[in-house]
Amino acid sequence: MKEKRYTLPEEQKDAAFAAEPAVNASRIKELHNSLVNRVMTIQNPEILQSLIVYVDQNILNKPDSFEEEWKRSISIEEFRQRCKSKLMEKYE
Picture 1 (cartoon, rainbow, N blue to C red):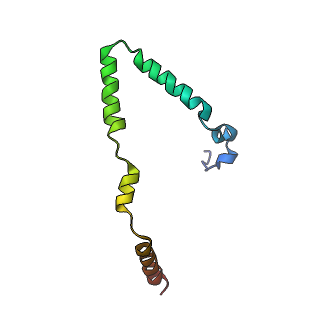
Picture 2: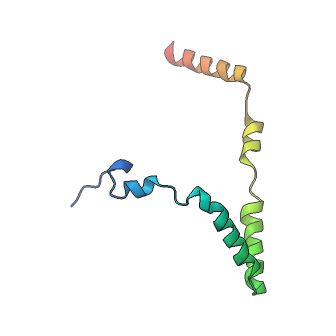
Picture 3: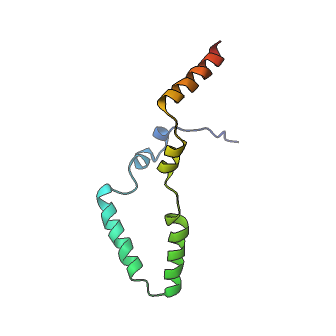
């Protein structure tokens, strides 16, 4: 039985491919335009409706994580106090 072992990304045979971005940044606008054109030419109303439902449920209703993080955030002074108390507990 062959032993499974973890390999670093550099050791993998497709490491050069994995290091490259999936899409060239200059092509993003081109891909966006292509997608918009494909959506605009959908003739079947059922497919179009299912696409609208998908976008409504999966894309538009996602909350902005930055705003949530900001609401949960603490001040720098409070962070320092928490760190200091945890370090004192650990090392005393």
